[in-house]
Length: 312
Image (cartoon, helix red, strand yellow):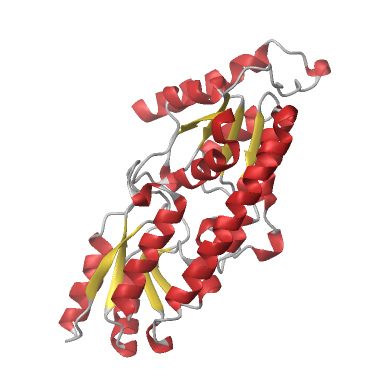
């Protein structure tokens, strides 16, 4: 009941600014720059916030809704989040329904705010889909693909602050160059794993883009969204796979309880096959602010180190 009241409150807040407008007036124009820095930008995930900070530099003040270990698939907006979104000059999110119900709120705000999804700057032909046709939103695990969204963010900031165009574009170019170096680094690191061992088994299906970009096979207990449930059937099938392929490492994730991963370990043990938890990967959220894993590049490097160290 409390959750229902909370959602009703959020819906009411979103409708208030629209109640005073007649239908004939049409949607309001999004606000534009008033000449006062910093530009207030509200982002959803840490991966998005990292990109915006790099592009916006000292011209922006970034507020991030989802912190360390927060699962965006299951995220529900709080009254405090709505306040941050209302106060923002620009809103940037990941897109492709990664943010769940929050995406509905952001779409409604687009008439009044500069709202941009990083995924809108990515070639849709390169998107992955599951067997049911659902688009995989975990774009950031293909560093080169994620990088193609950088200039879209620069354009979104420029749309609000045209005077900053050259500044945003220059920073976008620098950030893209750093990501290009990171992409090469990732390819070289994964190439050190023997081909027969390049199998990544995780809690949920977040690493499809990573697998495609860097030459791994990926298996998971849950689907693309953590909203889906991984049951006994999925666990038993993965146990059989691990035993048959003689895979000796599986990986937990920072946003998900490791209960199902531990079940894989125990299931393999019952079949006289030793499997270890190779380590914890950062999937849909960055690490603690101020730590190496608290940046996008640091998160990618951490994951690579853990995967390579466990599968070599």
